[in-house]
Amino acid sequence: MPTTVEDPRTVEFDVRTDEMLVNMGPQHPSTHGVLRLVLRTDGEVVSEVTPHIGYLHRCAEKIGENLAVRQWIPYTDRMDYLAAMNMNLGWSLTVEKLLGYEPPERGRHLRVIIAEMGRIASHLVGMGAYGLDLGSFSPFLYAFRERERILDLFEAACGARLTYSYLTPGGATADLPPGWTDRCLKVLENFEPVIADYHTLLTSNAIFVKRTAGVGVLSRANAISYGTSGPVLRASGVDWDLRRDGEACYTRMYDGYDFKVVCQRDGAYAAPPSAPAPPYDAVLGDCWHRFYVRMLEVVESIWLVRQAIDRYHSTDNDLPRDHGVPFKLTDKLPAGEAYLETESPRGQMGFYLVSLGGTPIPWRTRARSSCFSNLSTIGEIGRGCLIADIPAIVGSLDIVMGEIDR
Amino acid sequence: MTHDDEEALSRLQAKFGDGVTAPAPREKASPTSDPWLLVETPRLAEVARFLRNDPASVFDCLNSVTVVDYLPIDKKLAAAVGEERLEVVYHLTSLSRRKRLTLKVVTPRSVDGGLPEVPSVAGIWKTADWQECEAYDLSGVRFTGHPNLRRLLCPEDWEGHPLRKDYAMPLEYHGIRGR
Image 1 (spheres, rainbow over the protein chains, first blue to last red):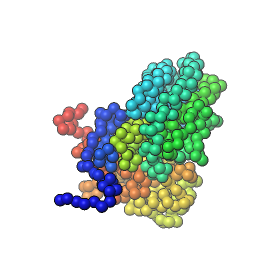
Image 2: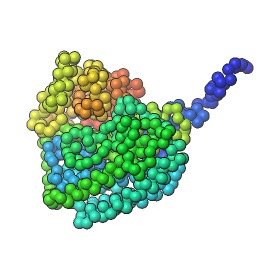
Image 3: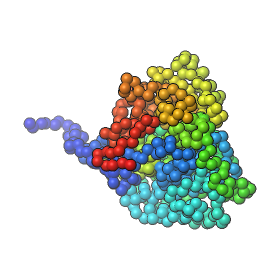
Image 4: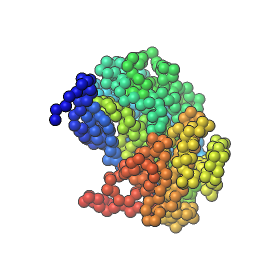
């Protein structure tokens, strides 16, 4: 049946092709692990994104109900395997919260050094892999070169390069080896000038800006309602960092430290001079801002590590030498429950521990994943964008499937 | 109970009466154990909406939804477990006021042989959408009023809810042998 159209603009607007379901993943390289996205597309435009998760699910929470608290530490490593140190720290602090235990002063500074180095290493992967997602291979190599040096340091401290199980309830399994902090300072010294290269390679790169600025905008209200955290939340303009705003048993780790929470205030970042200013087409809460917040956080972390190393050396050597001290595997937990969130590189990692008392094994363990909430926004921010923008959006959320699926 | 919790409780009791109570802590509980407020199951959505919108509360962020199964599987623990029940725990944060609050809802382990029902809060905090799906999947609580309650982490045709204390690991799934 022939149809007549009076207004030519209606035709332009009305050219619709058949809807198509495109399956992306679970083996797609730019989905950061085994994530499957089903895209409902109309031509190049995505009208609906449905994530399917659970390919790595091993019910770590159930495993935790059958182990002593310290035996669950290696399982926390395997959740966010790119920031395993921060996972260890989160669970250790939760156990310490229930026990009402405060780690020794030297252990506190050691934890700051390790946690912040872990943050740098994790953001380096996030940055390098993001370049890869957008079709630029070299930033990945630059990032991994520096990350290798941090992994070498971790290897010297605990013998492992990926799954450390280094920080435990009570402190750490061992003190840092002699000369470690000097090596660490040397690594930072070499690393600092490289950040300017990263900015040249990605942050202010015209193609990179075109691919990320104004793409996948997550509004402030949505960021809070979806429970996002970490750089994703701060890139939407929410001034919230658990290192400053968390519970006392976490923030006392950072007592006396000087650091800024990276967030846009009054339309501007308090960025170091080496960092480029936001491009004119970047919108608060878009992919570019999420990337930028991570890059600025790396600078803050370097500053924190430097302070921590000074303090570490100015305290007495009171870290328990033997890792059997102060808690044995058979030590019974008190009755009660503790929920604690810590600022891991990808956001707020929460651990919940319920104990009935009289046994060293918890009644219930729970890991609240930050990436899980961050990924849940994909249906909202992925709607209406182009297919080519989907990898850019997923990459900017910096997800780790091991943590989402647990 | 902390001062903040008492404040929240007095505000909630002024509005909901006995719908919200502060139970006594467990026997011999650690002094650093978290306090919580107990909410009557049918009034949960109402209480949550109030906490989210009340200008003196503004709990704008839901951190996590957890289900804890209390079933005496071990004779030694039977006394500590107490009554058979499920507890649904909601951890809330107020970003603007920098406060935290824990809510709990108690429900039987099963109702007429089916899953127990708890009102959904997905319409109040968007993050509850996925969190409740996960809780349904792993612990077997049906959240009424949820827009699309489905299995999230386990396969769609998975049987049982793994985080229940009486869950038996299947020996075989679609021809794949376990154990």
